[in-house]
Length: 472
Image (cartoon, rainbow, N blue to C red):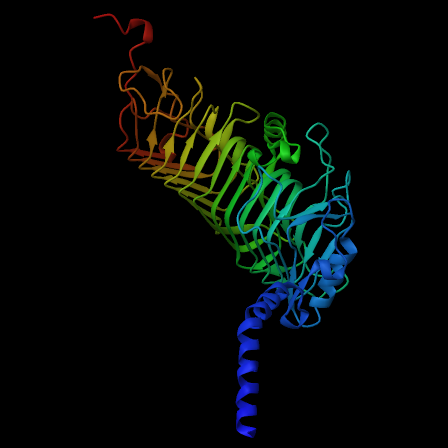
């Protein structure tokens, strides 16, 4: 009798597990993002409301502070999370949303943070300050009070830096990934305190004044797969406007700025449009050196501006650079006070530009296996050398077709205009121009005599004037 009773109880218990088990597992799955014991804290648990109207700054900061006790994820679920203040992402804490791919156009969906603090004052605290061993990922950030008709300064959206209260602190191993910035005035910066091994990856969006500013990186930093474009603030869902945003960015944006970095690795980055695509400067901390591969800048005034770099300088490979007929209208400018080494390899320069490159300063600049062209009837040289030492080798100087349909191949029979290729002006220390060709050959103006070595370049043959083309 006792055995039968035990068997009956066991069968009932097994049945209860079979019936209720799926519900139990479902309930567990639903609480994953609210279970602080598992290291994941949902901001709703701390009082946040994703209605686009409630200020959630304090609630999100409470979640961050709690996660900092042992390290963990602060989860931002789908919603519009208004923040009228700023956040400090403390060591070992990871702010995570659900947007694992860039989300801009329509609809407004996923995890959207909406900051408002600092309107009119770009020196106000950054919206999110990141300390060591932190990450921000899977978020869309949108400034709801910014207007295409009255663009105002705002502070940095994200800043990787040490705690200003601790002069000895540094910030290492912070990551920003899969983040979309819809209309940031200033995007992401590192420093000015010492930092290292930052990883800024999969970042997309519209930035208005400055995109990414790297400074005082004492150990190799990485920028990978970053794209800035006016497209990201063109949707009506975010009160955008293509023409107004494009014009503002082309007049004001410095997309990638590099101060001090002891090796910066930059891969697959792009901006459209910008006043300056890539700018290299000297800060109080110093200047940069690094490797740049697969980078691009389109619809710029200046695509690459080198004002100051470390002696070992920059290696730029597989770049694509376009300038419009606005401002300096030049893809590469090496400023008069610049020194160090700049090497362009397998890169292309085109667009309605006055020059492809203007080289001054007292450093070394080389172009190898590059492509130069202009869509203007520019009368001065594609490459204007006014200082330093230059090498141009195995490169091509193309010509403009007036019948060319953008996005399509040239018509072989078109008569074209080719600007002069290279002018080596007085003040240039030396030049080596070797093994280049052009649509009509390579036209070189040498004003430094035997300080220039010119060899194995395709001779320039003046094309028949368009009005004379039909004559026998």
